[in-house]
Length: 135
Ligand code: C5P
Image (cartoon, rainbow, N blue to C red):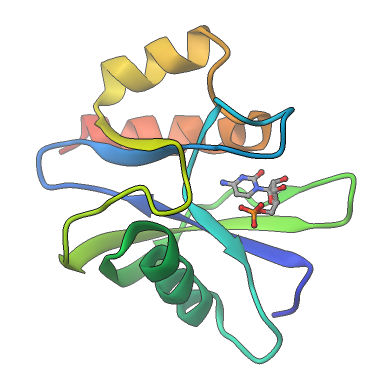
């Protein structure tokens, strides 16, 4: 993996919610909700990078699971991959985001319909909604 890959965490709870984070920057994305994550550094696996990013951004330790099937390629050349994850230590806090929220399927759909989800991350919504609804 390289600096042109971004990994994001689909952090699922036992009660059918996913953790969304509201971006604080850049201005065109500020206020929109995303799966937290960030760039993979050279030499890191996707899982290493996700564990590091979620520690930095949310102050939690996660266990990484499998990946969502959809990978998103941005015009900038960045590739976005999402991995399922569960929190094994800590309570999430918004260290780098404006705020965070555990959302259920209904709230996720409402945020999407309101145009409040980062456009790239919308590609993952069908898979995430299926995950949430089968819990
Ligand atoms: O979070 P960070 O700014 O490090 O992410 C780099 C880029 O990856 C963002 O500018 C954004 O375009 C993209 N990204 C995304 N969805 C995410 C995380 C990052 O589209 N969940």
